[in-house]
Amino acid sequence: MTITRGRNFLMTPGPTNVPDRVLQAMNRPAIELTGADFIALCRSCIEDLKPVFGTAADVFIYPANGHGAWEAALVNSISPGERVLVPETGLFSFFWARMAETLGIDFEEIAGDWRSGIDANAVSEILKADTKHQIKAVLCVHTDTATGVTSNIPALRAALDEAKHPALLMVDAVASLAASPFSMDDWGIDVAVGASQKALMASPGLSFTAVSAKALEHSRTVTMPRHYWDWRRRLSAQWFDWFCGTAPQHLMFALRESLDMIAEETMPVVLARHHRLANAVRGAVSVWSEGGVLELNAVHPAEQADSVSTVRVATPHDAGEIIALCRDRFNVSLAGGLGQLDGHSIRIGHMGDINEATILGTLGAMETAFALLDVPHGSNALTAAVDSLRRGWS
Image 1 (cartoon, rainbow, N blue to C red):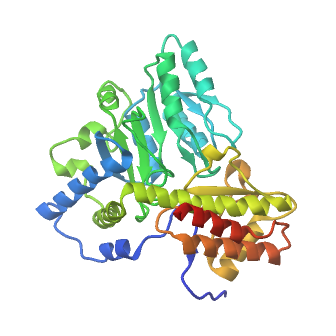
Image 2: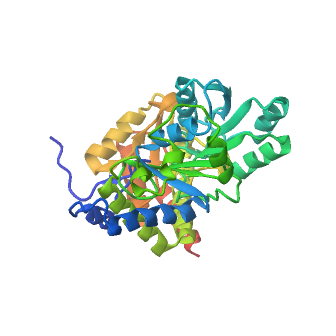
Image 3: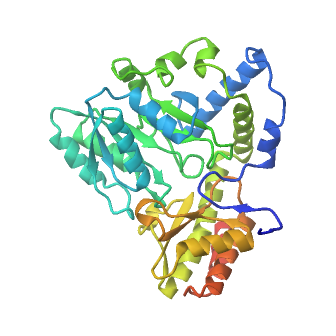
């Protein structure tokens, strides 16, 4: 049995740390489901999610993980036999495309290298060639949690506009929402998908779809069978229909508290904090890479995510051994690679309820693990991280 002391550093890219305030918000009895207080709380959460998404449009809350919100987005937007375009940026674009396929939706994929964001020019060319407008939506992942790559969504919107194509722009913002700039209305996004367990700092179990007026109107013509996920049902004046049944009360209590915490810090400060901490991680990885074994997966600086950094580990060194040592010896939880990067990368989550000390402690534990396991790495990575944080505060 391994005995550890001190608080665990949960530095996975989801779930993330749940603040004490959010935990305490759930530590209460259930209340009357039809009471005015609970209905007001649910309505306030729906309304206060809108500025997080950067939208004035409708937001729907589902007791589900992000995959549930993916399905909600698909079944309300695409009819069986219709086609969607999916630019590949990592494992989660792959998963969303395969979900569409299981629903009887055809998909066309634009192959990617898992190290770069979406090629807006490639999207534009395909849409221009689709003169019959058979492509009904473009599905894209803003930040892919497997690769640590963030794509340029405004450039993608410009590609659709240049092609004069009516396809819906549907964006997975699960790993970017409240960690990276995201402005649904300004960027011309039709459907955005989010979840509670990442930068929103709440317990896993809630997901969201934010839906433009265009997408909502389009959903009325879609022939895909749906009931639980149906946006039309959830627009009912009857609050019971907002959740298609009993609301997940304690998850809503948690969400209310996390939204309060974000509002107190203010969204600009939240985003600046994430960027500052991510830069510190990137500064350390840059120094580590001098040893020829470790490197950041995302190759373009503008596409390096502010919520998660994926660090590639060259053979014969074992990424899993590094992760296990950090967990068992130092009580620091990191994540392994996914898909093509399984066994060959370490993922550092840096979103939600974290600060400078959390980042420096994590980087220190990782560097100690490298030393113990004889993983070649450049020295003075922590100094680089401190310098980055100093510049971030100046």
